[in-house]
Amino acid sequence: MTDLEYLQANPRITFRRAGKPDPEGSCVVYWMQRAQRGLDNPALDTAISTANLLNKPIVVFFGLHPGYPNANLRHYSFLAEGIDETRKAVENRGAGFVFRPYPDHDLIAFCDEVGAALVIGDENPLREAEGWRRSAARKLRVPFWTVDADVIVPTGLFEKEEYAARTIRPKIHKRLPEFLKPLENPVAKFKWKRHDLRKSQTSDAISILERFPLDRKTQPVKTSGGGTSAGLGLLKRFVRERLAVYDTARNLPHLPGTSELSPYLHFGHIGPHTIALAVSEADAPQTAKDAFLEELIVRRELAINYVARNEKYDSLEGCHAWAIKSLSEHAHDPRPYLYSESSLENAETHDNLWNAAQKEMVITGKMHGYLRMYWAKKILEWTPSPAAAFEIAVRLNDRYQLDGRDPNGYTGVAWAIGAKHDRPWAPARPVFGMIRYMTASGCARKFDVNAYIGKVAELAGE
Ligand SMILES: Cc1cc2nc3c(=O)[nH]c(=O)nc-3n(C[C@H](O)[C@H](O)[C@H](O)COP(=O)(O)OP(=O)(O)OC[C@H]3O[C@@H](n4cnc5c(N)ncnc54)[C@H](O)[C@@H]3O)c2cc1C
Image 1: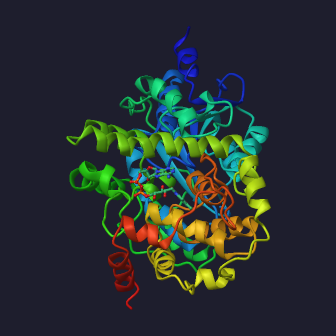
Image 2: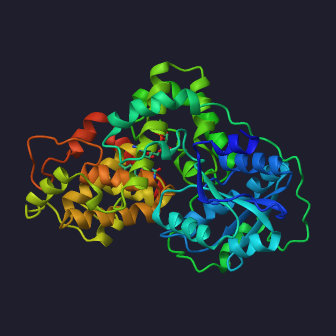
Image 3: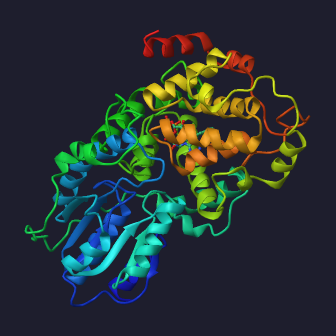
């Protein structure tokens, strides 16, 4: 087996356009989309290792355009905050970084311009991103591989849709020794020297957004900011201050108990390997570490499996037949309250806890994980039909959550409203049928609801 064949045997790689790298080509191009980082990025590693084997330099192409579905200024600002740092990290590894915002974001034109020998991309199971990759595979004239860079165990190893966490968990655990290992982070042997190419300053990424045709109603949030260092800082703090009690404190929204890393994972500013290895090696009780790794690896990769294997992932139709049937049997049950989408969006319900969760999301771009379940289940209870509830929950989640528009979000809504990956709960209840139910009084038994509502009121300046 040649070195190149050995590299190609990596189960993270999908060969979108087959063939041999163009021997006349001058470089390897890495089309960076999902894995927006220079650290612990298997797609960048593959691109650099391949370029080293081909004795060619490598350049990262980052084309930014305003067409990400459902993305608004809040999302773009977070994304843009990470670009300059990613460029520096990529350049430190001997690769070039060309940033071309809309309307100059065309990959095919760039590959022609630099004479690509081979193009490597990363993976994202959402349908629009998958469509862009298919289109690139049709249009490129050189081989095109994609690397599943944002999961621990490659998604391609699970060819079918998994039924629940219990079906995917043993399969994931079996493969962890093979895939949960430090990544190599190789350096390019042949330095990128094309300084003549037109490109935009990555430090201008935020101001470039001013000329983008974006939805500006959802404003950026004051967070620790996008980018790999901000994500690593949060990770460090989480491991130091919260990990040891994660298994007991993670469902207590009035306390800061979870990692808050989901936006960084969503934008690829930090990869799951970095987080999983830091947690595995931390000096913390094994029960806490296991509870965290269950969420980060098993639940997250179950969500990715669902979105990759079920075309209807963002509608009720993607849910189990028993759940759809049970919900339809209760479709005409009287709803205790009925709210329009705008009343929900403006947090104008009778339920102070729900309103606080909604406000937290609108103001901060995040909602505590435990409350996300309650929030979506109440939308099912207070809107005219399960299908409408699903659509509203997805729209609000995608618009306001910094980590929205993510496989976890579609799966979370499908879990809460359509019992995806869950089981039937007897006896059947009005409106919910056999779908698991949640109540405000149940929340009050679990955590300090008033402390949480007070915290959000302070945030809202009330
Ligand atoms: C209705 C609903 C909507 C949701 N929307 C989103 C969303 O838009 N984006 C998003 O990333 N997550 C979503 N989730 C899943 C989960 O609530 C968040 O990932 C989690 O709250 C993020 O906070 P954290 O980073 O502090 O999580 P931690 O508890 O610190 O967990 C670490 C990581 O594990 C993963 N994780 C945690 N819980 C889950 C879960 N239940 N399913 C899958 N992965 C998980 C996340 O990547 C998270 O960052 C949603 C869940 C529900 C019920």
